[in-house]
Length: 280
Image (cartoon, rainbow, N blue to C red; front, side):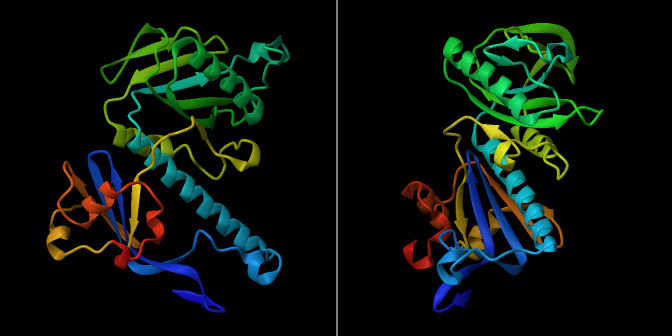
């Protein structure tokens, strides 16, 4: 840990456990790293926020991108999404008035988002509440946009397009008339989480306030335990799945073992990032 006038600014991270439905992931880092505490405020100690250099801005952008990818994967694995969808926008609708505003220019992320959000809200009114997560992507011309989405519990009408993708039927969403739409049943959320996170790149379009994606309220997140106290017997329950220069990743599937992880998971959802061993 690092101190600033007796205040703990950074927290040293060696291991992280994330608990998803039916899955526990253990991340072991080869070298401990420091992260800022969630309640640290530079202005409290310096009087104002310190200016950043150009190089630190680039570094911050890369870290922000990685955090967005991690969050996207976490939300995908924690919510039972059942449809992978794609939405395009017709070019001939540009400058035509509809819904009380000028229909979107396909190259404008915020206008496309407003148009898409209107449709999503209308679908919830017509067919009941459902979960969604939306990510933008450029067409091959690197100008026009289309959206990829994950849906859970959508009750709108799906029409068989007559086409298939790896044996799965490709549907069209009948009520979407702003352009072309497709919907495919998801059979492997883990593959989908990895696939959709690849759309998050440094060159991707961003929404207002630099958002890289948007989602419905109330999506679940994994239970996160920083620096968990695990016995050697506990560690044997995990299977290695990935290794690189920074970390190793292990997985445990099925029922949680009778150990601290299970006890914390059953304790309730609160800020686990700052729990100490003594609090367990």
